[in-house]
Amino acid sequence: MEHFKNPRNMGEMKDADSVGEVGNPTCGDLMTIYIKVKEENGKEIIDNISFQTFGCAAAIATSSMVTEMAKGKTLDEAMKITRSDVAENLDGLPPIKMHCSNLAADGLHEAIEKYRKEKKSSST
Image (cartoon, rainbow, N blue to C red; front, top):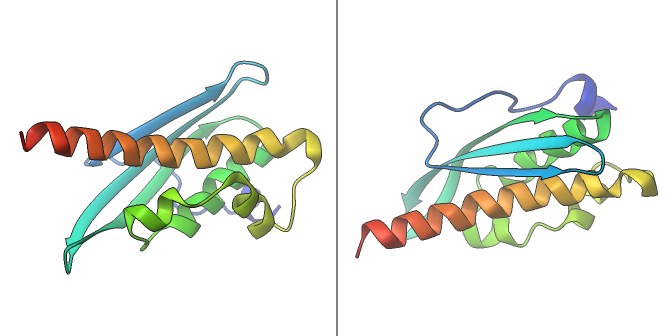
């Protein structure tokens, strides 16, 4: 409930390096995850991250939690964040709301994958 009542890192990031957008047509939840990446000692690190979510309390809480978990991590470390990790860090979710943690992790992974793809295509 804390991450729903007081979400962290909420809002659009105008200068994002990449954006991951995911949704669940069954429940109507839509999530957008924004990332800003910096290179430090040869590693790509999530320097800033934010989200916009239209959905239930669990969708907002998992979006907030995934941003907290990913901030400051390398892209490789952030790609390893799973839906189970998100749910565990929120001290669990009702089984009917587990799809929300899936969306949050998927949105993060999509943003990272798009960033890597765009970086690769711009360097060739």
